[in-house]
Length: 98
Image (cartoon, rainbow, N blue to C red):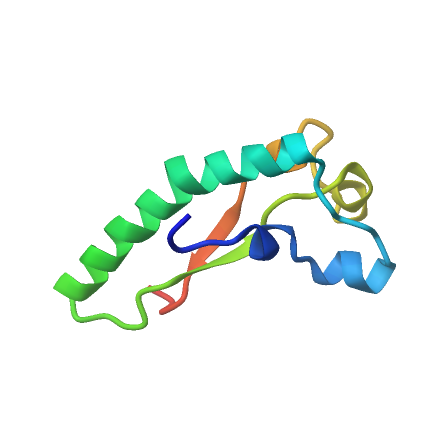
């Protein structure tokens, strides 16, 4: 995993405020690693190249929402079938606002 960490994919201010344990199971953690390796890191790599070509900085991508345990998903009013609960979804935004 080149650009993203499991820690940032499970971070949640809502979980902290509501004292929800958002620790993924080993199976979910494997899904998160798969998500990073096969989707998020390649997107970040391409985004970085695009930003450099356009002279935009910083070139990073911020995870705004990653894994959500069922209790956290309910707290944020996520869909009952949300892929976030399986470790197969992440909401992102460009660090440079572009």
